[in-house]
Image (cartoon, rainbow, N blue to C red; front, side):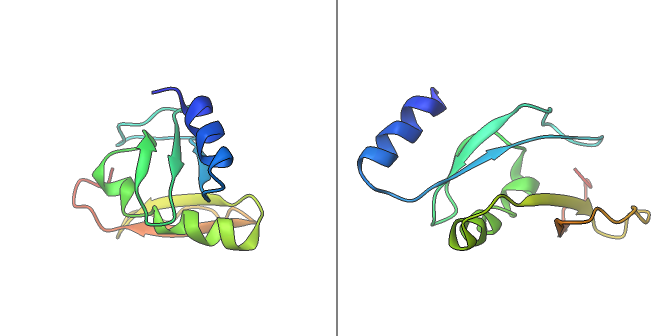
Length: 100
């Protein structure tokens, strides 16, 4: 899927969307830094920024579109070890049993 062409198509149709890019990943996860996707207002994801567990975080993309600025979304395992704060990051707890 050519995400640049899809973004141009959506822009030409004046349809809102958010670009999502993985900037860091640590195990367990199926994604890698540099993976990209387009998130539509209804939560649909075109591209890949993680498996089913990460897709539950898609509604945050709509929030990003509303405020009109970049958002660093940090997805953490539910009940996992404490992670240091990341100033400016929105934290989402991942409810998947795999932790990924």
